Image (tube, rainbow, N blue to C red; front, side, top):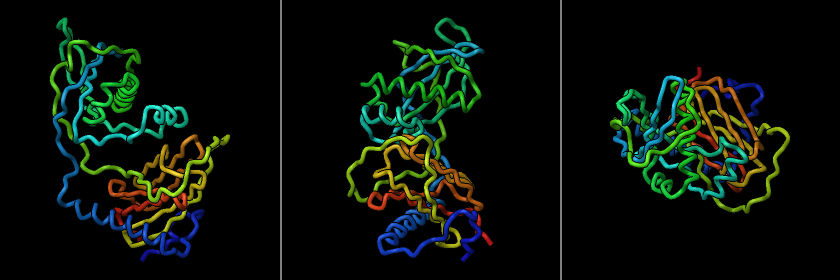
Length: 290
């Protein structure tokens, strides 16, 4: 087994693990193995045919732009929270809530007047779309996130003002899209044993304690201590090939750790242990350290 000292110097070595911690380690290990076993039978991407929803009109410096908001059951749904909970999350930490979307390629179309324009297809989960139909707030949020996503992906500058077409569910034709078959880590809550305490934002985020160790030559485990949290609500986790980034609600925590190992981010799993107030992450490695 590779020496854990290969990790960055400021990370402490693993402590002796109790029976309870070992049980959660086993849970994460099992989940990682199941994902690895499925790798040969499941392709990198899946082709879907989004269904039409509604169409919004905006513009860019190059002319009129239409965004077809579509839906598909193959798109994963966002976290199931109430609108009041979502409003609170957005006020505290806008990175704490994400709506999975598939952003399609631009396609040239003709508008009602026969003039050239550009259309984009953006797909969300079908169940979430049905919920969004009854909520002006969710509809505006989805359009805003879709617009910002298209701007980031295609280096656009779209007008934030838009209007929904009344008599057209989409402009042009909705093409098939390829989506990732493997999802990024989702944080699960385990053992609901604590009631919520009031959280007060700090002047600056606190850097939580991170404990890393190699459980196997091809598996890196992490424990992140988050004593001010009692659940995963508002907690964000991003894993890159050699980086681990954790953000807490109300800017309570922020961790950006460089990992000098190649992490297989597509196969990572994470769980929030409510009793110990700790985030546990299992990270399979792309190459084994020597």
